[in-house]
Image (cartoon, rainbow, N blue to C red):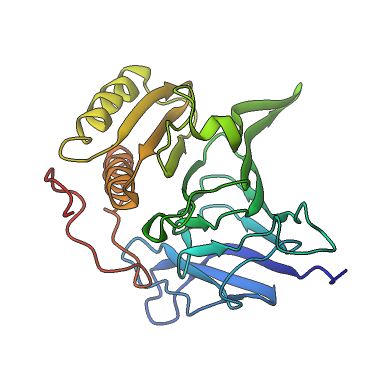
Length: 307
């Protein structure tokens, strides 16, 4: 049996005065990574002091048995967006080895601790699971009442362009976002999903659509519920011109959006539009495409995605 490859990335984010601009505060990072994870060049030249962090998986893809662990501690008043340098590939595992014919699971675990008055956004590029791939991700987020968290998850099940589906593969996900109080954990959002087998075909699942995506935004506590309801209406209107099935609903402190369809671009465009609305809602700087993301048409326009 081959040994597992356990890649780690530990990030500390904190606010610090800029030497060039004494009156300007910027989010600075400290990091420690082990292969195959590494950080590319980090940018903190945004006018609002936000830090832009690209994580690279240097092996070019994930195989069965690999483990990835990402730990982020966003300290008080910090603001950052973290993404992956490229779409991540999970190679097929089942039926590929005589030693392990049932395949081996690849796993990614993320632990985010977001402290007072901080704003953290986790927006990786899409995950592509090859036929027979086994992938499980677990994300745990501890959030201060005064802070916000936004995450996007976008997965393509099978190499559609090559005529492949997920086959006997499995995509499994667990997401828990909570705030602590004297009584213990107060969950803002908890979600467990598994896409495989019949769920890929069922009308209660994907109905044979190869792309699934979700966006979760948790706001600071105490925002006006009426303002959030108005924001929800705007998010739903931003589906115009996009293909696929899109739903958006209100959480107690935030918004949850889902996408199923055949176009990762449509999903990205819709999530980008929602992301922009959340920034406007909180009077923050408008989001920009990260330098590492592929060049796109303007995703904020309500026009049909190019075929």
